[in-house]
Length: 414
View: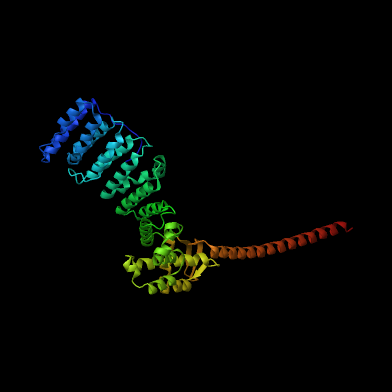
């Protein structure tokens, strides 16, 4: 996979290697039934006129047949082609066609074709200088192969370099968006749902204020919204609501936006009211009612934990808010702890959920008021503690003074 810049060491003059590859291409074509192939004779004539780029065009145009090369010869043949095109000052003119070929099925090796293609594409990526923007197109080709082979793990470690690469290539917003979407698609194909979602959000962040009302922005925003709702482990929706393209749904798709706001800040009762008012909407959108109800119950419990002033919740209150039998409360509390939304422990003796840590789903004016009220409560508690300490200190000093006077009186007596 993409790594340090390296080089190919292949012996022979340009003319000798061209002749070798041209003969190989002709032979491959003939095994495919093309008896008229004449790559070798055509390149030989061009070499006599020293038309090297025209020679390379012939080789690259014919190179699609390399996908039918025997597995043990595949990488060597492509490496020879890459070595030859590197001799041209116009290397970037030839690489797109080679990458296109490698993005199509390797017919000679259906089982290992993806790995073979990735090996060659990685070589192409790594022989290019780090600031060569052709690397962008090679990476797109790599992602096509990764997606087609569900081989996301091979590219995943390199994604930490992505922002640096885009910067060095001076990629614009549209190019960055295409790359993020390609990564998202590859991750989704491999079952990496959270990675797919994160890169989808990155793509949305490339949408400028002038583009938020475009159809592309709308479609991507709806896709991100559905993904955030559907992924079982995704509970934070503020990353979406902060985006201009998502806010634009308030006008273009108000029902979708209303649903997002419910999961961002509201409770199970509100979700049930939404379903009553929009019967069949979730099914039409391909959203699982049972899965969304479960997620909303967990979010409701997280909100209860964050807003309770006494840091504990009675089982009865939880059962009522979540609309569940009292006997299921502990199961739901365990689930919300596993989801990382709340930390605490259950007290079966007192029938209370004792909260150690909780996180607000949104933080706005109401939350600041709750924090202020909690700080006032803590301040009053601390003032009470200080009053007790002050009284104890005064009592200690009084007793100490009294004892000192008693000792002085005893000394003064004859």
